[in-house]
Length: 445
Image (cartoon, rainbow, N blue to C red; front, side, top):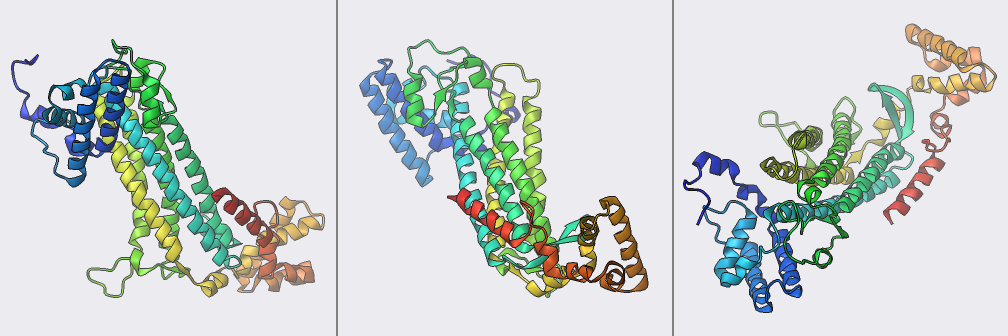
């Protein structure tokens, strides 16, 4: 017997159905139903025979889903109803008891919390691999000179190891964000029912322990309407993807003929359909292009939840595609970033030549005057005048600086001096880079 006298309009049915994308929740739905059935029996809400029939049926369903032989039907609205429908076919009336003391509202959000928790753990694992790859690359190129840039203009020289480690610390912060997401997913919504709780003496703690949750939600209304943990994941993913986009941008620049700082492995490059000579850094470009996609998912879900009245509304079905696509996109981006860093071949001579431009030692000359007692703002003006004189006269900076500042300026203008003078904490001097590497290795464990 149905509440409705007429069938759903086909267009509404298509709009309302989520089976096409929420099938991937099935491992969590099956695990949740197992734990729920065990709890119902332990509390005397269903009999042990019913429990055993449900568990046996869920085993059979899991085998079908893993093998790709699960008999989906046209009327299956989502994976949750498909599993329950199939369970009733296998276990008979006992299968119909699995939904006792729960609603699809708390069932769905629990599945999604379990999925998000697993995705956050996976992201942390991938980030750890990426971070280790960056450390290894930094150690291989410890004392390789490289021009550092501001405004894409040569600014001050650094070691390549120091530059690479900047991405390590970005990734370390990303990993912490995903650890926070995992913690946020540790509160179990199941047991909230549709919104007000349920009419049975359930043991939510039992189910939480079975499913690996740390605690249960204290408010049934908040439990079914909460999607904060998804926003947390999308926020962490958006920031991480943005970090990777910066790496992608530098890979694209550095692999160009104009820079020539690195050669990408063939495995992470593409050719041209018309120009046989081309080797395109498409993976790096995609790191740039994928980031705003993840950011857009975060923005879109904020839009879905914005001003949404409590408790459950069908709008919340829109959470999953934003989450699923972001999880898949970030997984590929981290794999690509790791592969490119691991396989990149850097041109030491090309980078050293670019870092040997005397003009990028101008700050060091200004600091020399400061050490001799000149206020920095005055010394900045003096050296700016010497730079202008050298550029306009077609001379080296040493040609105009040494006669006016003395032989001490010549020593300052040697490349090793530029690099090793940056010995402040967190600076590019080798001793400081080695400190970073030690700290990075300790953080990796």
